[in-house]
Image 1: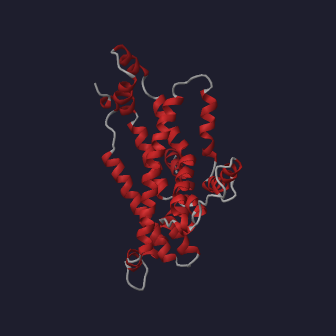
Image 2: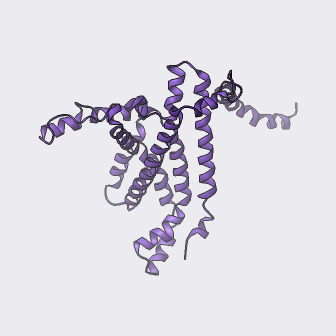
Image 3: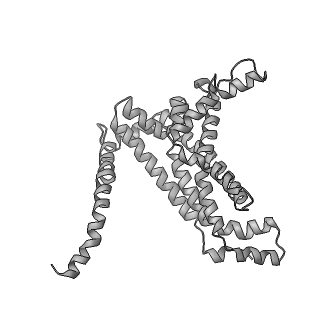
Length: 287
């Protein structure tokens, strides 16, 4: 083998560990998921028919979409305001930046346990309110009877836990905005609102699209926070997949739930990339 042929093989050898990892930990499980999902006594689509024929599936789908529709806009709005605030680079802004970024180090399990210690019947919130004589008895946030309260505790937990991720992406986009645009806007007498709507926001579209796509996909696959705080009181798609796998020991239905999650995630990704695709950065700045 010549020296040139050896050099041609080097990139393939360097990629080999990655290819082995992808095949072993992604490719094989994905193939097995398809096989199990389409294996049923009622035919290839038997598991899908079984899902759609029950109210549990539709309730889980509705709850998953509802949670996603509530937390993603809230996270985007809070992240945008925080990014604009931090981008002012006032004295001590780095300290606030570190405070905002703390939840990035927490897992969904840790965040859920922290929320539970706050909102539990004898948690910090109830103890504080009773010590201040605002309430006489604990306020219950968890349990099948209090599904609405559970829902909003889940929303608060997710917004606090995952907003920093959106914040970091948008802040990076803000810092990449060409300062010459803003200086020109000052010369032409643009107000802060005009600079935001006509210059900053159009140039932030790629960052906003990336943040929206990542957070929507993660929100649609939410599991740990909901399962630990509400269990099956608020059924979600990922939670039902876990339930069918661990409690019912039915891998076929669990894999079917997994494929449904993957399918809806692909549809969401396609919708974002199709309808929110940013144009050329220079051309997006309105005159």
